[in-house]
Image (cartoon, rainbow, N blue to C red; front, side):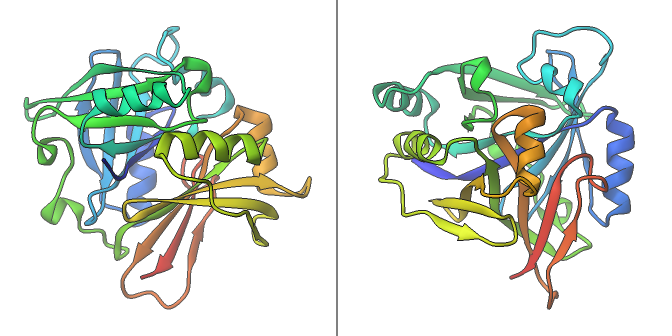
Length: 264
């Protein structure tokens, strides 16, 4: 039912500047196109099929009712992420039966720069829960029309895929219960991540992991994320071939995202 983490949404102020930033970091960035709701995007795709979505409002100064628009005031960065499912309608029905506030299928679309129309369906939470729980996605047009593959997914840094997304949370027990209900599993025991100064609960989703992280120390970098934007994705862990040691790219370098690139 769940195929894995489909993509991470990184909200940026200006798309052209964000593209240059990620290219300067050593990533291949593919123009994505325009959405009907006034946004446009670019994709950093990986060989495992997951990708980073750099997305911006074409007229950021004009108020929008888009669920991500409010995050512009707090600086953007990673604001949401999607889990791939085989059938959004069925997944939404199961989530609602588990007591979670999801709705859908909601149609989504994008026109690529070459004029190709891309279509998908979403299962989304109530707006106030945006980022606290992932949205769900399946494809109407073939997935390869939406997600670049082949040479377009070959990264100069050697990154071949996504390992995990770290989600900052204010209440670990509550968040773990909601994710367990969404995924249909019993939450695993909590652990500790010394580097994040956090207590964590880790869920496996396909080949990927969702790490819920509750800060144990006021100095934890997770605290600022929670204070600024509430619960939501903060760190993205990628895997790369040809590396012996991890590479950490801080939020100030990557449009608000903390990227950790680990050896395969």
